[in-house]
Image 1: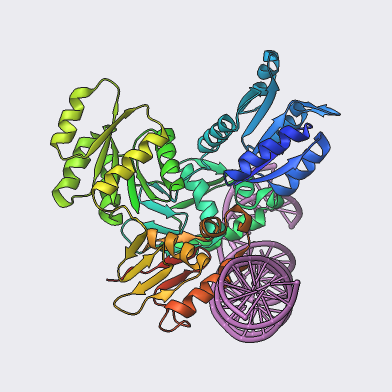
Image 2 (image 1 turned 135 degrees about the vertical axis):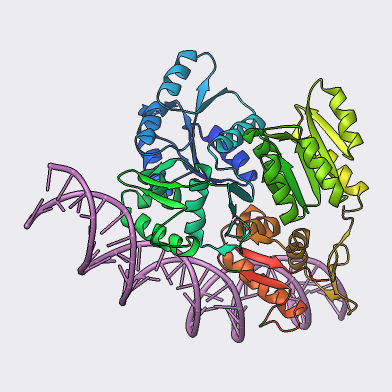
Length: 225
Length: 225
DNA sequence: CCTCGCTTGTCACCGGTTTGTCACCGGGGC
DNA sequence: GCCCCGGTGACAAACCGGTGACAAGCGAGG
């Protein structure tokens, strides 16, 4: 799980990074707006923690830019007594905020809550109807049949589809979830992945019963069970 | 050690699952009565944590069904102020209960207490099938054969594998358990460690019977016997 | 302090699998 | 017809796991 932390105060940034990495997260750092955006595009983190006061811009700018291209959870850091900032942050699509000073403990708890809310903090397995996906073993069991072995990307694709079982998941969201921002815009990647996955899990890959195409929108996993 | 957690509240379920998996348990989840019973039959967990209020039934039903076929410890989750439920739960054979809200810390303490009572908690030694690992002496005994001396890292690797015997343990989890976060991402380390361990414990290291590779996912210890 | 032996980390290579890329097909809307 | 979209097959590039060799680290004993 990769987290982007942005702050111009080196001490605070180090503290945040230390707390997060102790907890097992991979942390990428930035100290100003342009580098934050560059790192975000490059590393495709799963969550962003943004300070509001930054040299040459603000965390709002970053939040806005991120929201234009991604739905990753965003947490803003504010100094005490700047309540009006919070309204603006939440308006811009931030998911949570933390008032300085805060304890590493609190930070971790909030980060975990955000990841959980985003469906990213799944344990080892998830299910929808007849489908049981084991994220550790990279296997999918359909009903009582033998589990099918999956590749890493196939597992990631099914993870987000099962998390949204029965609903259409947009092409762009699938791309960023499976490949990060690198794959953004390349529909060919998704075409092939879906094709290969259907060969494995569909009874008749030419007439998919589980992984439906929603023309012009994305794909939808049928959760019958 | 595998634990079944059943709750219809996704947040609480995720929290419980996260706390348990952080502590090294394998967690399997379910959100309703039928799927809980299906998962229980299929996964044979060592302990079950059941919420009482579930859509389309209650934790009591699950507890009753489990008790008909198994003696695994069962812990029930109740909302505050439903004391009469506790009587019923304990009547049905539940071993412990927890009143919401509770802290992950409390949960873990109670779970460990239950496992200890059931004789499943490991001391300085642990076993799976024919394998007996002595964490103090750094030795592994296979069946009745002579114990094999292990290095520190080999012991750590076998510790997590035996704790999850029969299940796939993901590469990333192995790396962090053996090396800490430092080794995260370096698959070469794990490759070599597994290679060296196989030389020691496998009858035919080229055709491993105990420490199986799960391509693209991780490794799995076969618990035969 | 030095050396020995064991453990651990790093490099390079092989063969198999997975993933990325391209080219082409067919259907539906304009 | 033309264009856009999704599906498909083929091939190449990247990656993964297994293996041997060797160097670096480390503790024990001289």
